[in-house]
Structures are given as C-alpha cells and as structure tokens.
Length: 152
Image: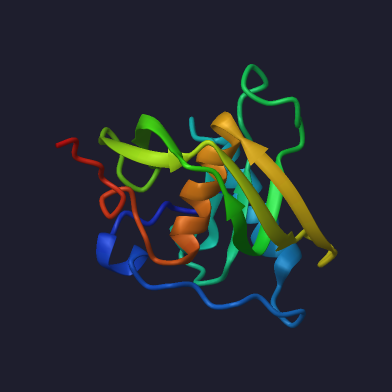
C-alpha cells in the first residue's frame, strides 16, 4: 500500500526499534516497495512511512546498480568501512526540494537480515554505499541535516 511520507524532523530523529519475527515484515516491506515506486528516490525506511522499525528498502536506478530487485535491509549495521570520500549532494524523500552536502564512505560492509530473515553480509560501494548509509542513518534517527558537511 502506498503510504504518506513522514516529513517531521523530530519524528524522524527517534531511533527505530529492532525488528523481530513477530513484526509484520511482509506488509511493511510491501508498503516500502509500493511507496518508493511512486517516488523519485533510491530508498525508503519504515520510519519514513510512520513505522518505527529497522527496515529499509533500497532500489537504485538501473544506470547506477546491477541489482534490479533492490535490497531489503532489516536490523542493518555497518561492520566495516573505508575512509570517507568526496562530499556528496544528497537529498531525502522526507525533505522534498532540499539538498545537503554530506560526506559518506565509499565502501562499506553491512550485516543484515533479508525479508525472509536470512542473515546476510554484503559489500556496497559507490552509489549503493551512499544509499545504504542514508537508509541505515534513518534507522538510527539520523537525517541528512545531522550529516551535513561543511568544508573548512
């Protein structure tokens, strides 16, 4: 079901709860997929549709990723990372029309559960790494404004 995107910064700053097998994972994932399909974004996290759970769905344009299905990341954590790379111009579906310069890692190793609750470890780099970091930040209550990078 297509959901309304939460745009309240205070609401988005609350860290999400860990997902358990008792949560309605299938429904939440479908809501994220349906909602993202109507937007011009690369990912969406459950708290952006009013569900305070650590579930994200990421799907980059085919020109930026070979993964046509995208990724469902549940209870994701970054286990390893490279040095930060150049500053990025980053936007967020929760803050339409706003772009913020952020600094993100070029390479990350992420541990997570997929939508069937199978434990996975994946390596992400480039734009995929950027999108995954953005969505993991959402699960931690961190927005692009908290990642705003100011050069000295």
